[in-house]
Image (cartoon, rainbow, N blue to C red; front, side, top):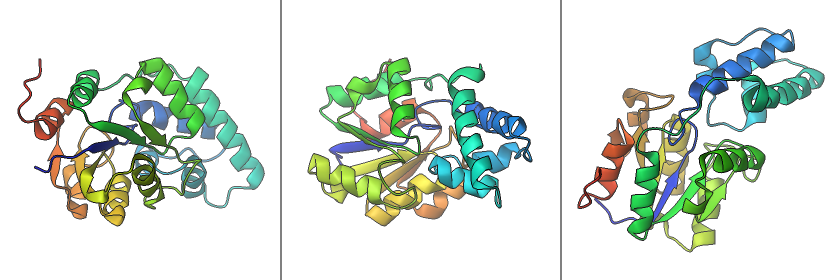
Length: 221
């Protein structure tokens, strides 16, 4: 495997087990706003997109007043109203530490807004691992490659020196458009068959497996 200098992670469904919390928060927001409650799968299929784009997809034809209320209520539900756990996936901290110890640059490219990413960085105490990050309110929504191209420019890395790790077709398509290798993880939203449509160099079922792939000579405990 290529010796990558930069490893770029998606967040939800890749490093953090937050899919159930996202789905239930969106459904609670719809209920509060007296709109049709989206199914689990319909919400899951939008995870990774920017929040405004998610609302457009899930609530077509909703008024601007409804969209504004949904946005406010979803944020309330995710941060305060919803008690569904959203821990880091098993082995996430060990993986990040091993990559840093082996002189890799790390970055995040996420569908979260900046406020949301800073909140989970703080809760998980992981911000110090990352050299840069891009959020959905700072660039065009996935699968547009702008987030990745901006990270490459900031860190002075060529596309060939980077790899994108993600759980959705949006992550894979974004990396493909940026000319960056990609590795799919089956921990989050999309399954192996969907991820395989975008020619990833590998698909893994755990972060321990990902570590062995990226750092094959390192034994993890």
